[in-house]
Amino acid sequence: MDFVSIRIITGDVARLVGFYERATEVRATRYSEDFAELRTVSGTLAIGSTRTVSLIAPGAARPADNRSVIIEFLVDDVDGVHRNLTGFVEEFVNEPTTMPWGNRSLLLRDPDGNLVNFFTPVTPAARDKFAR
Image (cartoon, rainbow, N blue to C red; front, side, top):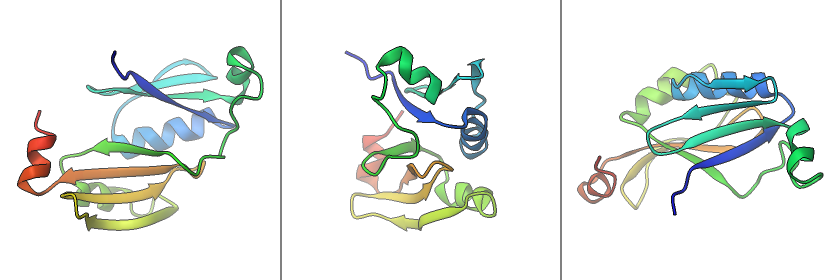
């Protein structure tokens, strides 16, 4: 089995796609005004409109209602990401901080309130864990 993607349901696909394109520096593929994907080497962030929910299971997902999932991106320089996003991101939850498990982490909220973590492994053990 392979983990392939995570999908965010939103009331404003264009706004959320624009946010993630800027934050990740990855260009999205827009399949329609209701669905887009940002593909990385290890997985895909899919963004779908509320109109797509009825195609899956009516009422199964609500936009801007997540308080339990953190979307995480491994980056080469988390402090550089922070500098790049300062003035663009409305809410930083945590400035770059080195965590006890060895990652330097930047936690923020996307425009729908979803938690997003950009991190860089900084200890030898963490770097080994994420070696490519």
